[in-house]
Length: 178
Image (tube, rainbow, N blue to C red; front, side, top):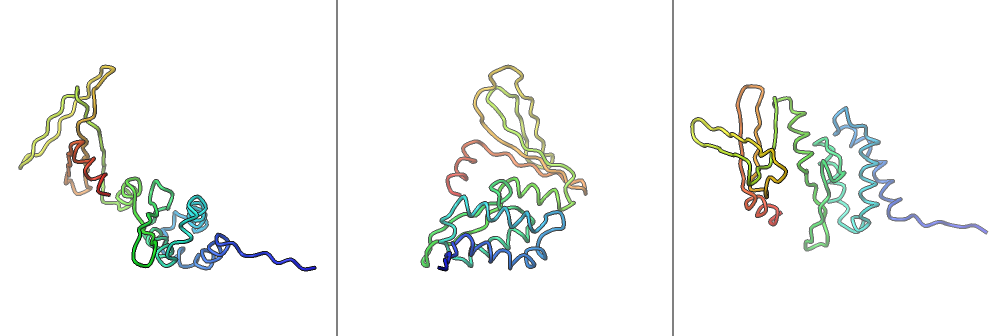
């Protein structure tokens, strides 16, 4: 009596990823082993089995884009996001803030970057124009109040300084649209 075992969708996908390892390896930066990248993708798909029902080209294409950017699809550096279209569900690669910061740090162009939250009781002042500046003195008491703004400051190696300030309302508006 012979028994046959059916190949499960995850096994089929794992086989496809194994066959694509040379392509991923060529796209990945040297500090990310291809085995780690593939394991991360398999873990994401096992945790979200519906991804196997999505358009396979969009799934594999998203994996390749993540590899080219040197980001892991772990939900911190990058994620797979499902979108419903005419042909069913497609997946799209989306870098997360951790991945964007990683790419910036790895570019070699950035000297430093910082991001902070401003609370109601903090002293905060910023000016635009020719002499842009941000002055933030956090309240040192126990209750700083509610968050009112966020800001980031980036300094490039050539000495340029970039600043961005957003109110909590602006951040929420962006979050709702994404």
